[in-house]
Length: 112
Length: 115
Image 1 (cartoon, rainbow over the protein chains, first blue to last red):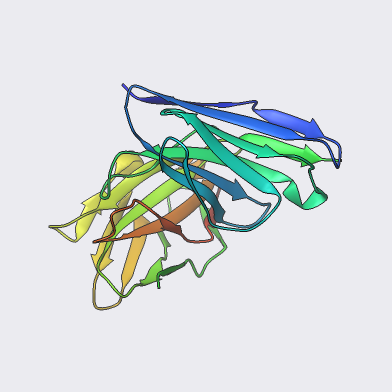
Image 2 (spheres, rainbow over the protein chains, first blue to last red):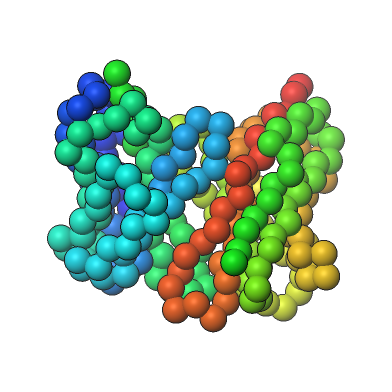
């Protein structure tokens, strides 16, 4: 069966520090991959999506970036975190147009 | 362009009472429709989906939803809620005909079940 792993579960970082969040999927090949952010009291904001290795599309311009160095690995990064980067980050995968997205357990990021 | 509206940001309800969470969407093409549930500090779990066929869709945990094309709605219902149903619920649409699986999510409805 397919599984998705996201880590770390929680992270506290100072303003201006770098960030790296990792997401891996097991049990499927060539998935579509997604990074979402969920700010307190708000819905899901799609940040990045990827349809293949090194194929990344950005939905919202900001100081975050994403990379997909391997088929089932998706990384969210930042060189310098801002206070506004705080939130709950979710990774998700899907296999096709009419298939639901499957979500990881999320990373709670707090910026101090 | 696509958009999803969940008019109710919070819905309080007593245990064993029925509940309806509303979802309306706007799309220039036909869509697939989904409901997800999110428990505190967790990811989203799929409750149910509508792809085609019967407009009444049954999902997990006793939830069901009805697709109404003329009203562009996909409301979620449960005849009798439990304390454990307390969570946030998200409606999502996927526009058909796209070659990429990009979902549009509503802003969520927090269901608070009281004893």
